[in-house]
Image 1: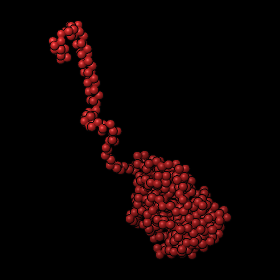
Image 2: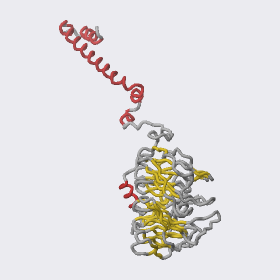
Image 3: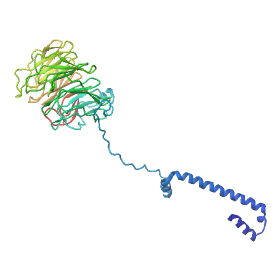
Image 4: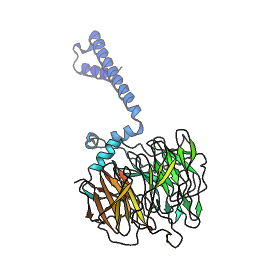
Length: 442
């Protein structure tokens, strides 16, 4: 008998009434058995719920009631160590930077910069004479010398996130002063030098895939070319920056669609000071215009003034430009959209009109005359001049405006990036590192 029935019998012995009725006893015994069976089912169900909780669930049940009612704290996590992908130079399997935004987003981000100079995050490492190009939605910086040694890696700066992203190292030896252009799809680099060695090879980089491909051999000996331009269909490289031998007048053109080089006609004269260190080569939309000189190892020229040349790829022919009284030792040039503005380190300036084939004198730039290579960059109808000081040429007003650097750091080639001008890395003979933007908008 169950304990409750025994208790019923004891009570009946003390007060014998209908409690000992057999029918009543059977009825009560049935109710008690059903109650215990229900309790047993409830216990089994509770155990079924607790089993999946495992040890963690039992530990929670041991906590005070107040702690159980609180929302559970986030699970503790151990930060994963940073991973560094090992890039490969095999086409199609290279590790590239994260995708950049659209050109429209990049231009909007740059246009939001205040008027004048803005300091932006510096490149991860100072690079002298690196390839610096605007590739539609970011600033591409590749190669150059770091601590005198030529490099084969680089980065892309995203103006939307304001971050530098490493790119796959090129399948080339590290170098400085290489030719570099943006085709709208690929970056093409060719030639360059490193501690006395010169190179005759090149490669193409696709930002969409992060892959490099080697260019076929060029029909030129190794060199760092003095003139570089993208015509819309071909990469043009001409001349050499070398000063330790006779000047060279040959060049070549590379068609990335056909993956083929062709030799171009030799120029009437040689120049070695018309691209590096100061950029003095422009593409007018029809011709390659080169403004420079032929210097020897003593920085002397056999000509009194700068020499100008123009190459027409359609006709494969050169012509000399009229003489202009600019210094033969150092000059820079920029395409304004209507003419070629040239500036020397004596602050003298002139504008060349290709349609009329003539120069006109401009007012001198408000810079300090000094032994420094000037730099020029054009955007939106204005030209930024950087030398011993900074100035802006306003083409509509026909005058120079002096501007202050305001703590600008870093020097290098001036790159047009839509509405603004960017300067990244280190300049020729310098070690300063930085990235600055100049927004000329009123």
